[in-house]
Each structure stands twice: as C-alpha cells, then as structure tokens.
Image (cartoon, rainbow, N blue to C red; front, side, top):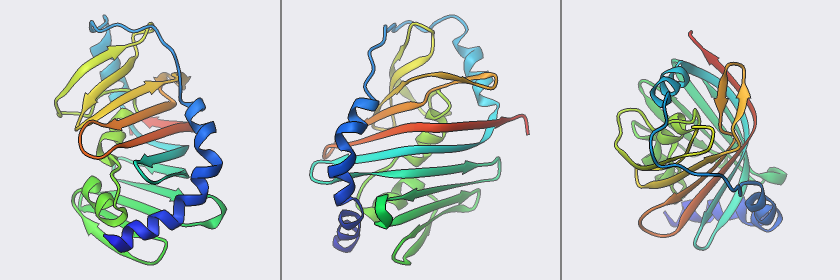
Length: 213
C-alpha cells in the first residue's frame, strides 16, 4: 500500500497545483431543486437505460485529505466490455481499467497489473484511493445504479436527476445537455459519506452514446 500511495502521489502532485482551482469552478452550479419524484421519471430511466455503449472524453479529478490531482479520461463502453484510460498531465503516469463479464483488470504505468471481479476494490487496492467505477457506469447516464438501494434523490427544474446517495457516496449531477435523443449530465461531483475525506469530480467534454445494439 505504501508503494501504491507513493506511485499515486508522484503521478498527481504537480497536476493538483495547476488544475485544482479551475476544476472546482467548472463543476459548481446552482439549480432549483425538488424532492418529489417528477412525472415521467420512470420513463426517463427506461429511455436512458437503452444506452448500452458510449465513447466519453472527460476530465477526472480526485482529491483526498492530503493528495489530489486531475487526469484526462478516455472511456469506451460496449455491451460486452469497457475500457477506462486515465492519463496524468505532462506524461506523469497512466492507468487503464478493462472490464467484461469475466472480471476487471487494472494496469498501472509502472507495469503492475492485477485482476479482480470488483472494480471498486481493485482500484482502491492498486492506488490507495477509491473510485466508484461500478456506480459511475449508471450515474453517467443520469440515473441511479441499477438494483442498488439509494436515498435522498433530488431533481432539478427540468425533472432531471440532480442528487442522490448511493453505495456510500453523495452524488451530484449537473450541466445536462441533449446528445442525440438523450438528455445527459456532463458534470459530476461525488463525495464519500464515511471514512477519510475523498471527493471525485468528472467534467465530460465529449459524450457519444450508442443504444439499441
């Protein structure tokens, strides 16, 4: 774990100083909120559930109590598999998560590689930090994680999901834009509910969904 934390610190230390203030401002929004499930919400979930693949380019920020930094994220998803590549600025390091029905493999820039059936646990083991990979695959589509309990949902003035609590995370979604026939969030803020302080910010730059395949 000491080795993993040292690697992560080397990868992100300079990026924190350069990007933190700009990234915080980019993910801050004020919206009108409602706590009663809006009419047509279940139909919206059904519609967005038809998205079974995508290509996303985004900026990912991770901040713990003592460390933090930002990455370029390249995320390719198909019905059978997904790949998430995270690249730190100025060639400071990279990691790649590849998953399918058999499990998940995480490759680090130093050549280390590990396989698991739990992507969240694997990322934490290899980097010393948490990233809710399994939850992000549904939250990215503007809906709760399928078949997992959640609480405290909040919708915005356009009846789009704005906040919820799920899997031990407080999740906030903002900056909805229409992409093809879907209304999809492009800015996310995640904060861990328990344990040491940890937050994740995701700002989508390019969202290309596929459906019905």
